[in-house]
Amino acid sequence: MHRRAAALTFASLAALLAAPTFAQSSYPDHPITMIVPFPPGGVADTVARPVAEALSRELKQTVIVENRAGAGGALGIGVAARAPADGYTVLLSLSSISILPEADKILGRKPAFELKQFRPIARFTADPTVLVVRADAPWKTFAEFVADAKKKPGTYNYGSSGNYGTMHVPMEMLKASAGFRMTHIPYTGAGPAIVALLAGQVDAIASGPSTVAQQIQAGKLRALAHWGDHPLASLPEVPSLKQLGHPVRFAQWSALFVPAGTPEDVIRKLRAASAKVAADPTVRQVIGKAGSPIEYLDAPEFQTYWDADAAEMTKAVRTVGKVE
Image (cartoon, rainbow, N blue to C red; front, side, top):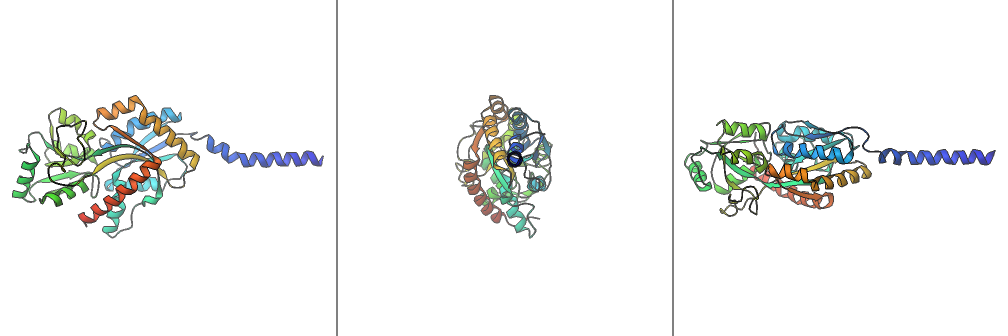
């Protein structure tokens, strides 16, 4: 009798010890929310939609895209940072995640989030920003654009996705390098800024290629230069700023993150699924057609890239200084 009781007790204990492993291995057992901290129509949303659809197939669970726009991306990123670290809230962010905490410090306020609150899963794209104007603008080249801006300092304006966002910082870097002045008009995201450019409310924007490629092909917009080191596959004729004598670079990358503290087995599943998503022909075609080819990095390599990028962006934000 005692032996039987002891055996039952041991079996019960073993079952209890195994229970957490069983629960974790069942991930995901209900829908996952993918926070996109920008409105529809921008680079983040362009990448998020096909990635979420493919992740749903790989994980055999629905991945719901939730746009949480505001404060140049800080609102949605902050929501993701405070979410439970259980793998059921993920973040599809742009490189602005590296910028915003330093911007908050410069403005004398508590950062909406800290980089240490996130674990990287994978980078999907890394596009150099492109300087774009309307096709009917008087500037056919970058040199003409800069010369006119210098003649009429502050007369022209440019739109962005918000203060210190991925459309604001590169333009400020360029202004400092080329020595001209333009008025900054912040919007809630890339989509609204592009609409404003097309409507003639702003004169230029710095955008990821994927959000302007169709308008350029349709003859509505004109690209004058880009912030990359190499020719763009989607815009091979557009020169880099480096070629034009301005050694400034800026990559508007997109990547998947989870809150720090997410279980390692969940992270492994998300990394494995992300690798398959990045190799998926449909995903590559959809995102590539939008002008943003897949440039996948798994978590370890992306962490190294992210650390270096964050250091560079911190310097850039300090150069920009305080913007109200």
